[in-house]
Length: 222
Ligand SMILES: C[S@@+](CC[C@H](N)C(=O)[O-])C[C@H]1O[C@@H](n2cnc3c(N)ncnc32)[C@H](O)[C@@H]1O
Image (tube, rainbow, N blue to C red; front, side, top):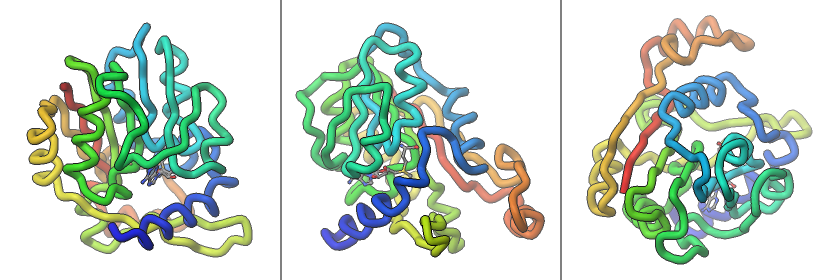
């Protein structure tokens, strides 16, 4: 991802932040979060990182159990909304943490903003303790391939599309292996299977895309 693409991504999230509460606030997020919950690692008493936390949707869930939660994101207006964790502003491509700091890393819907999947996995593996768990989700590469986008309406009701980079499942597996992470779970969130909720004009969407994997949830262990 070029510097300008990173800048475009940041600008998009700065625009989205006022309308981005720390909850699963659209049907895709609700379906994705249910699947994340099914594969949630043991966090009780542990030190956890919410990587690319946004406004802290997963920080809140972690804070209910973990001993310590750090929320990290590069978007200050997102981080300002995080209430349940220590907040750190930084790049997920260069984590501002020492090696082996965390027992658990959770990352919701952010891999598609990484410049490089190998570097992203390597950074996560570096800050994870041995035996630590990594649970992440992303917009599915297949959904991006068929032309679906990550879009939102801003405060003026103007449409905005967030830049997204697709990493196919094979490259995610290779990056995990290279980072000494063992993949334990791969769960594809499918239209009409996990994503079922009606939304405006959704009938045509569900007819057209039935069975399409729209999000991906992966759990790995160091
Ligand atoms: C789709 S949002 C997901 C937020 C949160 N994880 C959730 O699931 O609700 C993606 C987040 O990634 C952050 N992000 C994107 N690129 C980043 C980068 N290079 N470093 C740190 N954060 C980044 C954005 O600011 C945004 O908050």
